[in-house]
Image (cartoon, rainbow, N blue to C red):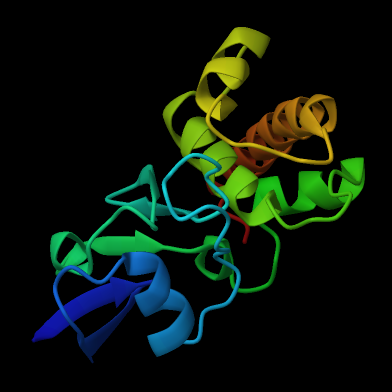
Length: 167
């Protein structure tokens, strides 16, 4: 059955079974490879994407439930890799093997969209379901604080530019 999807701001139609996991539609049908397959049962969150702005495990999300709904993958956080989370991940050098990092970054971006200056406890709670076999949890937390700082600086700069009338 055809389903209309809105992925990273672009509308597309896929003809797949309604119970097909969104993960496989993104990876195998739409060729968006940042979203990773980890466990297939929602336990690791390597497959995290945003659905309606909420971090979800795409391996557990049937494509039918994502139809006509904004979906964001890591490729959609920013066109040029300048989302504060992406910049912070690079600056802090978070990844070791890197496999889980797309899911980590998507969960972190959802957290920061909800809580602009999260505490360590906010971060621990939000990131609790994301597993990292390499154990980069402390760098993940540090990068989330860095991303919050980068986002705040960007917001301040934009506010100052708007107030001065200069681009």
